[in-house]
Amino acid sequence: MNYPSLSPVMVAATLAAVVSLAADRDSQPMKPTLTKATYGKLPEGTLIEQYTLTNAKGVTAKIITYGALLTELHVPDRAGQLGDIVLGFDNLESYLAGHPYFGATIGRVGNRIAKGQFTLDGKTYTLAQNNGPNHLHGGLKGFDKVVWQARPVRAKNGVAVRFTYTSRDGEEGYPGKLTATVVYTLTNDNELRLDYTAKTDKATPVNLTNHSYWNLAGAGDILGHELMLNADRYTPVDDTLIPTGEIAPVQNTPMDFTRPKPIGRDLKQLANDPQGYDHNFVLSRGDKQMNLCAVVHEARSGRVLEIFTQEPGVQFYSGNFLDGTLTGKGGQVYRKHYGFCLETQHFPDSVNHPNFPSTILRPGRTYKTSTIHRFSVR
Ligand code: BGC
Image 1 (cartoon, helix red, strand yellow):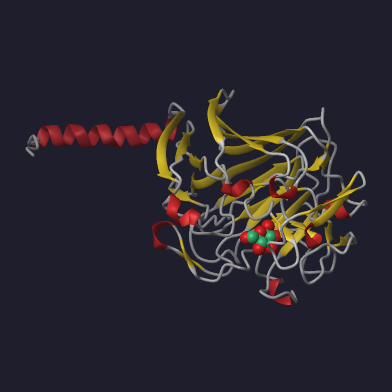
Image 2 (cartoon, helix red, strand yellow; image 1 turned 60 degrees about the vertical axis):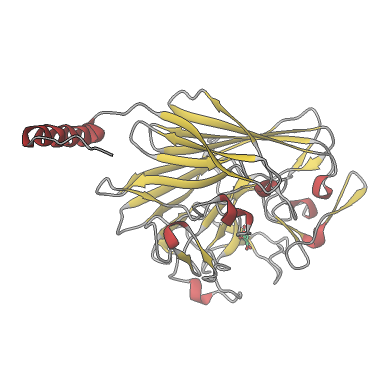
C-alpha cells in the first residue's frame, strides 16, 4: 500500500489540528453518540450486540445484550485521563465460560433466598440451590445469562438504550410471566443512570440490580478506596449469608461507614471466610425520592463515585471470592479485593422475612426503581 508523503508544513498543520482538537475536547462539548456493533455469537447462533454510549464529555459506557451487562466504563481521572473502572472481559467467550456476575443485570431476584424456598399466597415454590444450600441471583440461568432485546431510546441530556427481557411463567421456578426492562442512560453530567421496570401476570418476587465491580484506580486492590455508606443499620447474616432477620446498628462495628473510611481499615476484624464485606446495609432515607446511598473516593486518581437510589438497601461486597483464577481485560488478573460491588436492592431473602420491605409484585402493578452513578474528581 502507498502512503501519501507529508511535507513538513503539512505535518505541522496536522499536528496543530490535532492539538486544537484535543483542546476543544476539554473546553467544548462533543456530540453524544450511540453506536452498535456485533460483540460475539452464542454457541447456538444468536448474535450478541454491544452498544457504545459516549456523552458530551467523552465518557464512554459499553453494554452487551448478553445479561444486559456493562462491559466497560471509561471516566476521567483528576488529570482528565480516561480509564476503565469496571471489571470484565475483552470477549464474549470469557463471559460464557463463567464469572462472578461482572457488570450484569441481576434477576429475577438479586441475592439469596434461603434453601431456595418461599411461600407466596399459600403456595410453596422451590428454586435452584445454586449457592451452597441457598438460591443466588435468580438461579442457574438468571437474567445475567439471557439475551435481552435492545433499542436506543431518547434521553433528555445524553444517550440511552433500553434492554427488555421476558421471563416465562415458571422460569427458574418463579411464578408468572415477567417482562423486565432496564434503561441505561449516560448523561452529559457524567452520570450512569439505571431505570428498571417490570410487569407480571402472577404474583412473584422481583429484585433487580446491577452487579458491576468497581475499581476507581482501574487496577490493583480496592482496600485503599474511601467509602461512605449512608446507612446506620445493616442486616446481620448466618454463615451461609442469609439474614438472621435482625436489623442491627453499625455503630461500634466494622460495618460503620457513616463517615468515610478506607474499605480495608476494619476489614481484618471480620470473622467470615473468605474475609471481607458481603452485607446488606439499610439505607437511611430522607424525604427525597432518590436518596444518597454511597460515596467512594480513590485518592491517587481523584475519581469519585456517588450513588443515589430509590432502593431501601445496598449489598456491599468487597470482591472476597475473587481469587486470581480469572484474567480479565488487558490481561489483568483479578485477585481478592480487586473490585467491589454496591448492589442497590431490597434486602436479601426478603420473601422469607415479613419484617423486611416486600419484594412481591402483583399483576396490574408496575415495578419501578432507579439508581444513579455519578462520576467526578476531587
Ligand atoms: C453476593 C456474594 C457473591 C457475589 C457473586 C454478591 O452479590 O453477596 O456473596 O459471592 O455476589 O459474585
